[in-house]
Image 1 (tube, rainbow, N blue to C red):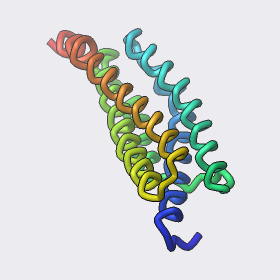
Image 2: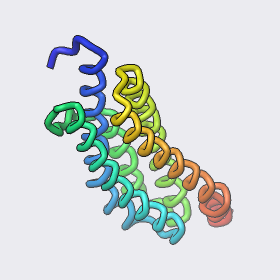
Image 3: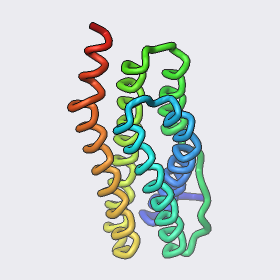
Length: 166
């Protein structure tokens, strides 16, 4: 697709984040299986369920834009997932692995926050209010997940990792 307008740019970026979300959904089971911390497991499970809804919202965006939901490979998410999965092969003690996986998950969240912030701004610039509302909802969920992961890191996972290393 030749990108000639802001709307075209929006569609291209939606295709990228659509692929990113689908990649994340495929990666979650393996990552969640490796996590020992119950609070972290629950947060991942909740976000996996949210991600299903986010994919559905993206499909709604495509429909509102008269576009077929089609993914464009997201190299950034692929790299973040590879980084997360490589942690599983390092033989880290469980508490350290939880801290490392949590950090990797936050990197994924930060990417998604940036991506959804961008497409939301594009939708608003194009005057596509219905699309912007859908994207704003997802952006809020991504920010909430990041805040939750940060709280779990500070209040629980990082403390246990420090104690295990002592």
